[in-house]
Image 1 (cartoon, rainbow, N blue to C red):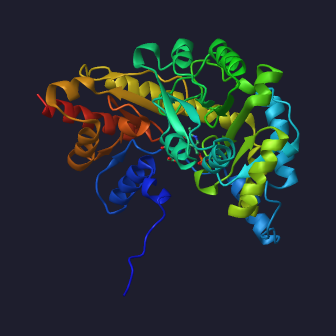
Image 2: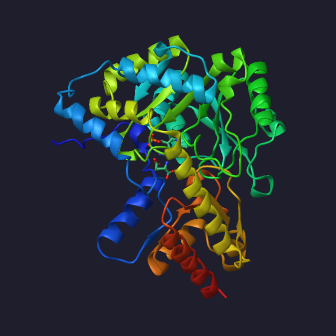
Image 3: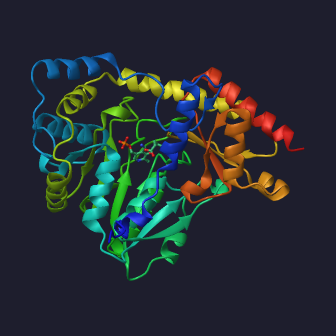
Length: 396
Ligand code: PMP
Ligand code: GLU
């Protein structure tokens, strides 16, 4: 008699990434000729700079197409240590770097290497969706510290203290933040480092949007604040956002030698090295002139200002002023309360009836908001916000 084939219990809890899924749906509609504006995408809309592409192409032509050391080629790891020293005031050696298949993979390595079943992990909501899912995959228990628009989504130390237990193992920090756009001030980071020291917590600091800060705000790396902060922090970064290299899949972790060794063992068994010639491209990215970063920073700041201006005559939603990354949150509480619409209802109707893709806040742990990305052209921003306003008018 044939038996039913079964799946692992673990896989019952795997969920798609809605940020990827909604972005893919919008791309598909656009490709099929629909008039859709995507304010969903968490990726820069411009091309990878030519010099990076040329370097990768030449490395393929020169036969650089074999396995590399699992944790990354020495040239790239060396360049990353130099970058960390110059940009982040983090002093480490190459054996503290593990280059992975995107920052998402680096985060996965870290969670798998730090979390034992039942360990509690502090996440600051709204949080990037994959932290929550990856903590669950590692058998951890996400514990949420809420923030709100009124406080510019800056967490309060008392709120972090209030949820600490004997089981708290680590705290995840993401500044500049996806999805809120918050940039954490130095004082807050130093208070968080102090909290971690007093309670013996690991810190994961995801700094993938570090270059995208506006209005003169400063990006501070928590690992640079003290020797103690350095020893308990895993800094995560990557090439996707600053260099428009989302498809190249190169990210990295910066951690103690022992933790890096453990993560390398895991990577040895799971993926081996990240793509050889993409690593060469990443080396080139670190040589690119600061003018490039400066110009994309200026472009995103202009787009942010435009999006805020376009929303200024829509009183039924409140918007936050992001100081970093390329996302903005819309508070949809009024639409929820008056018209009994959930964040999912709103994002589905916006896409299906008005042709504008946004991400429902539930995937970031806050169903009173939707996320808009301004990593798109000015024309799209104007048209996208117009469509949201058309939707708002239709509710009256
Ligand atoms: N962290 C944050 C906060 C992100 O928004 C993203 C988006 N992709 C990542 C990490 C992962 O980046 P990647 O895997 O493309 O390097
Ligand atoms: N991080 C981006 C976002 O939040 C890209 C999608 C993803 O990796 O989840 O939209």
